[in-house]
Length: 295
Image (cartoon, rainbow, N blue to C red; front, side, top):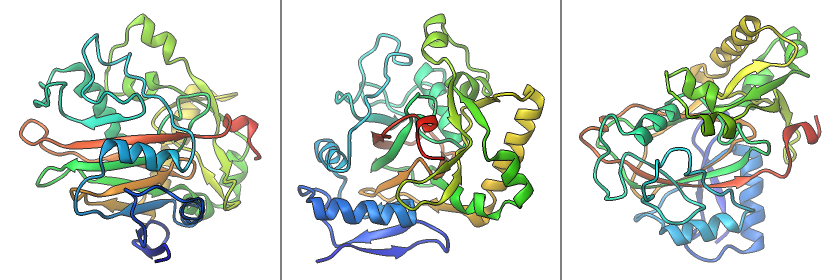
């Protein structure tokens, strides 16, 4: 059966059928998925049962090189719940699989996932694709929203495009988590030193331009801080208006994959003091820093 895509939103996002993602990924299937990502930017794979962590890593590797997980800044000397260094634990669970206490540092750090962001934009070479699989979901809340940064760019008036076209922003976890009042150790301040990224990117697959926004941005080169933050707020409000957003309501077994180069996303609130939410993410790294890519 050939891979096919059923649109989930007028602008982007599609459900994928015709592939068993638990089976070895063929080069032909990988090429079809890349083409689907170029068009839709967010792909949803529905399964009756969650993909095993090993199978998720194998499927992800078939699409490109993986990032390692940066556990060290937040696990505070404790064991991680998930042992694979390529899998991020997007849950409210501790190493013993019990619900995290409200003042747990990892839980507080994870609150930043509810800000609009692009994964790993705070790294010199940011993320390409992210793949998130659902093992346990709460009875209500906990959706993930995605915003199409290509459509957001296309909808800007020409004078705003001219204003943004060649700007370089500084991305850091210090900026995103700092807006939530998070305190950092000196080691974290060093590890999270801001990195430069283009504000406007050209997608290598589709050729489309898109905004590269994220809550991780805290400065724009050559611009005063008040002016930079005001511009970023204006652009983010524009880019996340409802017509540009697809909201994914999770089902156990779902695997959702998105292109960080041309989308933003955020998790939504749920009652994490009562209900577990166990999602697991693998992340593909991009080919090069944005300043080294074609503009």
